[in-house]
Every structure is written in C-alpha cells, then in structure tokens.
Amino acid sequence: MKKKFKLEDLDCANCAAKMEEAIKKIDGVNDASVSFLTQKMTIDAKDDEFDGIMKEVVKVCAKVEPDCKILI
Image (cartoon, rainbow, N blue to C red; front, top):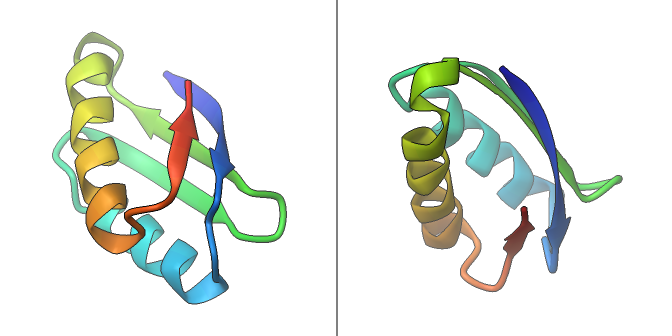
C-alpha cells in the first residue's frame, strides 16, 4: 500500500533526509520519501501492517523533528 501525507512545520532539507532514512529502516516499509520542498511524505508499506507502521513513522519523525506534524 502506498499513501501520501502532508507535513506541517518541517524546517529543513537535512531533517527531511534524516526522517526518510529512519523510516526506510522500519520493518515492513518497502520505500519512503520525504520532500522538504513540497512538505509531503510518501510511504509504501505492507497493507496488513500499515497502521502499526504509521505509529512507528510518527515516533521516528518526532525524534528527528519534534515540531513536524504528519497530517493524516
């Protein structure tokens, strides 16, 4: 399953790269991209585990960029 999310308050391209790298390491994630320019995130992950994976994504993103919100 591939889903796109809008990001709010992502402050820099370096943080976006760190978030993307961390998300790709989460079990069940096939691919991920985080764009600072468009303030969007795309996650491609296993269908049956998507909700659990998104909880991990939120945690990882909060560690890298505490002010950034993922609008679901």
